[in-house]
Length: 373
Image (cartoon, rainbow, N blue to C red; front, side, top):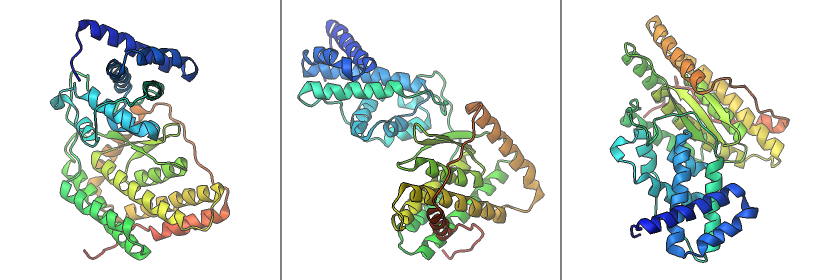
């Protein structure tokens, strides 16, 4: 795309403003402005679209959002367009100045140039629709420094890549095997490795200032509320706290970096296993499936709490360290989510509840159980 001259830039700014106005006005009143932009031809319309989308994304970053979260939050038909827009917008940020979380999320996006297909009016409607979605997304707690901030601090160290590779391998096998006993053994071994590593790290960092961090985990639909309860069950057993955003379909997690890595890995694996178990369950009504997933989360919580008690070191020397880490998590959670309210998802179908408990039994995770490598 050629660089526009000064006069063209002014025209592009005006056309981009027309598209932003169209997004603010809504579908009923947007057609006139969309037609004005389309009348300028494909090249100017594309540049104006990029400018309008870039401005919407810039404002989104200022509201605490991350690139991967923007992709997760928009409707699926708009995923390719928002990914292309993010790629274009973020090229102007020096990579060295980006937080590691930003770099990782951008690297995971398969970006392409923003292109408007003919005819222009329907294509511009999609641009306006996306701008409207981006403008409507709410303020979120800032997890890491944004791309426009002057000072960027490095993130805390994550889990040893060798440990992560072993755990991912075990959970991948657990998710793919058709045999419940094998999945249970593989998941148990993964939990054992993760829990042992977490306590080892607590000992190693005992003399360091205890700093908690946060991340967001996005859930697939439907039944996001009971799926959020499953995440909460795993988070609580791994010394993390969570909060569910029902309108967005994501869970905010607060904890130490190692515990957050463990929580996300295990919660994702258990969600896959619960989906597979639900597919084989006899009930098909919404009430049954809701009860199934709520019961599954309930039983997983019970079993993970028992497992955590079994693997916890008996030495009293670790007590003040864990207390200090818990205080850091609580302080971070209170800072990010002041005045949070607790709400539970209920279940009304007895047969679904019973089946969910049985399925969770098959996903039994006992970190203390020895499994041959």
